[in-house]
Length: 138
Image (cartoon, rainbow, N blue to C red; front, side, top):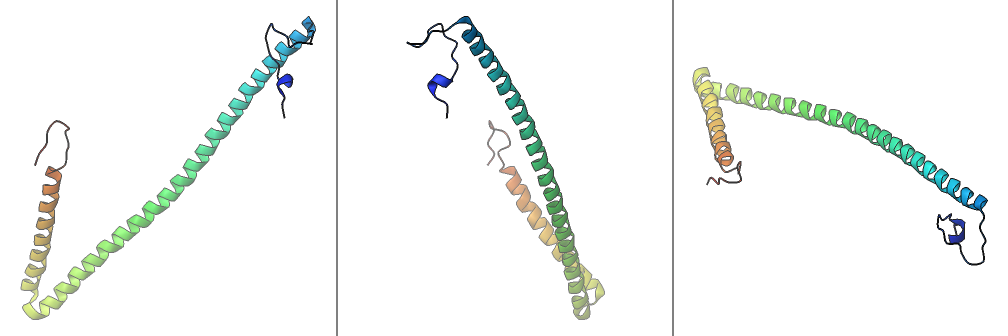
């Protein structure tokens, strides 16, 4: 552990009881200069290590994000396939009761009705968005 007397000081004042010569002053100056040089080198090493750490962290997170997006895409595709299978199954069942033409009309009409209702809800909510701070739409 460093004591106060171990730390080199560049002052004209000398602690009482110590007589300093020119050789000691030069040693203190060199010591301070070498400490500053060492400090600068340590900061450079730390900066390189931090940059490498964050570069590695980013590459790991990027790889994980790619995997997550791939899984999400597969889930969306499978979900869409399930909805298509549900619609086709509904069409097949209704065609036994109402005939193929009427069943197609019922399924397509229901799908269009659901699409128009959800589109209307989306448009209504989009109009409520505060896009400009100065204008407020209600």
